[in-house]
Each structure stands twice: as C-alpha cells, then as structure tokens.
Amino acid sequence: MMEDLKPVLEGLGIDVDGALKRMMGSEALFLRLMKKFASDTSYEKLKEAIEKQDYEEAYRAAHTLKGASGNLGLNPIMVTAGRISDKLKNNDSGTLEADFAELTKVHGEIFEVLRGL
Image (tube, rainbow, N blue to C red):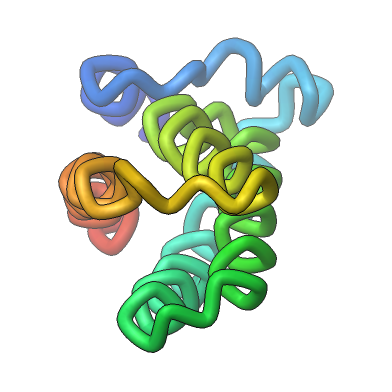
C-alpha cells in the first residue's frame, strides 16, 4: 500500500521518510497514526476559536495541530499551524485570516487523502 500512497503523500509536501524514521520504519504504525490523525479535531477547534476571537483557545488548538502534524511529517500543516501559533502567542492577529486560509487549503488537500486510507 505504501508504494502507491507514498508518491501521493510526498506530492502534498509530506515527509514520509522522516515520519517513518521517527516510527522506526514501521509502515503499519505510520498508516495507523495517519488514520487516527484524520479524525483529529484540532483544526475545527482552531476554526471555531478564531471565529469567536478566542485567541487563547486558538493558540492551544494551533499548537496542538502543529505538534501532531509535525510528528507525522505533515509539513504543510505543521508550518502553517506553527506560524499561526507563533503569531497568536505574540498577540499578532494581523494576518491571521490569510494564514488560516492557507491552513484551510493545505489541511483540506491532505485530509482528502487521509480520509481515503
């Protein structure tokens, strides 16, 4: 399965080799964690918190999303969630809308593949 899936994931900017290295080469563990991440609600919590302008909760959700996605090599999500997290930590919500739009795009692309696992 990984031989078909790996090029698709890498095409989305996912560091499959790095994630597998963190999982001691276990493709089964990688796939199990990717499936579990597909049901993660951090993105939805972040979206809701931003809509409510609850920036403390938004920070927590962005930070959680950054960490979880980073462990799995989901670099496009990790980088964007990290940028949002850093800005919220520093009370800088100036470009939050644009950053969240970017996160929505990459999150949607990646989750479309993950939900098919």
